[in-house]
Length: 66
Image (cartoon, rainbow, N blue to C red):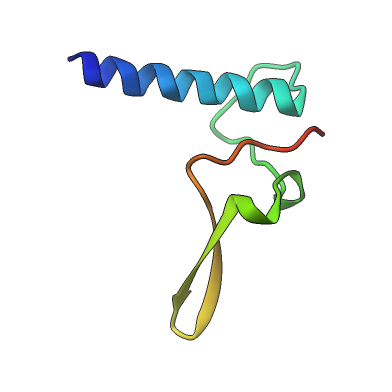
């Protein structure tokens, strides 16, 4: 149970960090998106599928200051 609480707290902390970095002043919804320009190149990893490279955001990525 403690491990689950730790994961939930980490997710909440990450969400708060994103809200602070992006200076969001309205309620956050699951429909909001963040442009790739808000992230550094090292925040991504690449996955090849069907001869196409896909840019995937790392779980540890936090947006740059807006």
